[in-house]
Length: 331
Ligand SMILES: NC(=O)c1ccc[n+]([C@@H]2O[C@H](COP(=O)([O-])OP(=O)(O)OC[C@H]3O[C@@H](n4cnc5c(N)ncnc54)[C@H](OP(=O)(O)O)[C@@H]3O)[C@@H](O)[C@H]2O)c1
Image 1: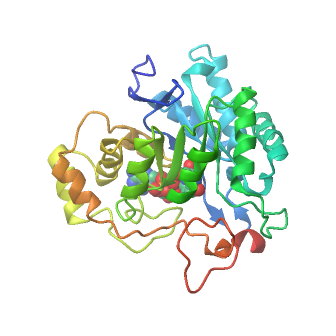
Image 2: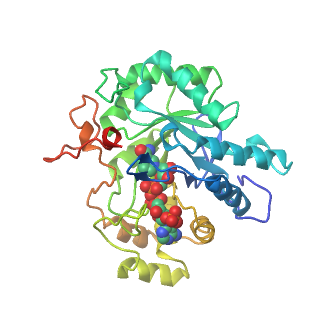
């Protein structure tokens, strides 16, 4: 199924397990973290990025209450609808519940606040951002993520969201949601790039009919939010030779590697040229050997590793020896 009728890039969609369709790529909307906390858009810059993105072909946007981009994203979407060229159904908006609202009765009010910022009546997908609850002062809350999941089931039944899912859950935690929940999650969002292939979790989730969304798709290839991480760069010879074969760039090849694995990549950019580059990945295919070659980079490296929460009972990842201080407390 093709999601849109325009001269822009035609993005295919993936069928969710509740019968709805998700566009196969989303624009990431997290602008990074600076000295005073989450980076905010100034002078409607981000709204204008979204307006450009829609013209180019993006219909799926990945935000979260913690990103501070919901307001400008919603404004851009409403401007496009007001133009008369698009309907609300042409867009797919994903947002996320932050950790400080994990009690069942807090979930509906948190989503209503997101909807107020977006100025929309519903979102297409609501994700539990992390399995860990926090108190407002960022001390650990003991709320069981299954209680939070009941809250997500409530907002799904209320029609405030068309689908629900989880993010940053490990395999065991996802299995628990599937066993104990009454509504099946439609999607799981996790970090995926060549250094973090997540084979086991991806295959399990897909076998259970969840759509997997891959965040930070570029990993170490580019400077993410101005910071370089250890690992292969965009000029890596293996990746560059695959890109050359198809007349594509390395970022395009890595995004296509996710598409070949039926993963929905979530690349973030605020630059028009890169918006175009990142979405132009549906006119070529990688050979299986090339997909495998890219997967061979796997070292299980995570760039989103909130080790400051690692003593939380629901921390999803492996513990490290020297946890970093909580940046939310020092911002
Ligand atoms: N669920 C979660 O916990 C979670 C965690 C992290 C991220 N996410 C989601 O995933 C999205 C993407 O993750 P991310 O922002 O960490 O990483 P990313 O998309 O892999 O990398 C973003 C960085 O790459 C640059 N970039 C984008 N396209 C490029 C290209 N074609 N060539 C060279 N550089 C390029 C961007 O710079 P410019 O903007 O300057 O182009 C930006 O600095 C987020 O925005 C968010 O929506 C979710």
